[in-house]
Image (cartoon, rainbow, N blue to C red; front, side, top):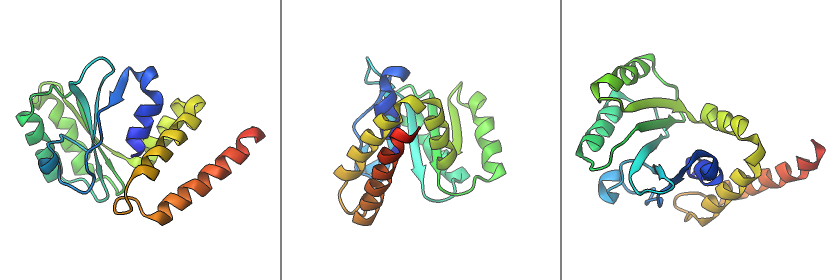
Length: 169
């Protein structure tokens, strides 16, 4: 949902938008999705970037599954980005670096989610409130099975604190 909120809040700056989010509790094979979040140009439906979120280490098998999905797809994918909550093994970094030439120019990369979000908020600091609005919309619209009530309440408390400090800067 963070990635979806990032693109929703910055779509006019990036010239890209998210496609509808699929069910987060179902495998991509069941939903027909190439990734958890699929990005397209503002004027098209063709998927250009896929994000796959992992709450575990990304492995070579994960990357191979992504490459298989890409090869079976009718879309022309430019980027396939894994975002993980775990550490990134050097062997995985090396493997993803070797894929670009093998795939004819598809960038496959693994990032940790904290640094991705920190970079986005730094780069687009002037629209951070847009991001918070978009993220809140996604979080609150998710069923309890995908986002717990405790997480929703914690986000709203953080949001309230961020807004109360907004005038201090």
